[in-house]
Length: 77
Image: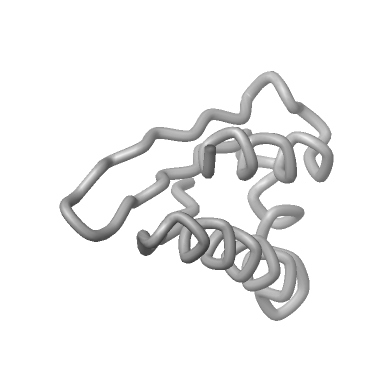
């Protein structure tokens, strides 16, 4: 569920939506989502002073909390 949510949000932000990929690493109590985007789109995902990245992480956290889990988003270049 969280993977599809992050993919949907990020694909609507970037110029090259086909380059977006999310790798999920499941743990016992937490899930790590590794986000890969095209080189030119990293700034669009992070946003000014990290505001967009923070907003995505907030929505992701709320979604995961509803399921009783913890989710962490890592933006990789």
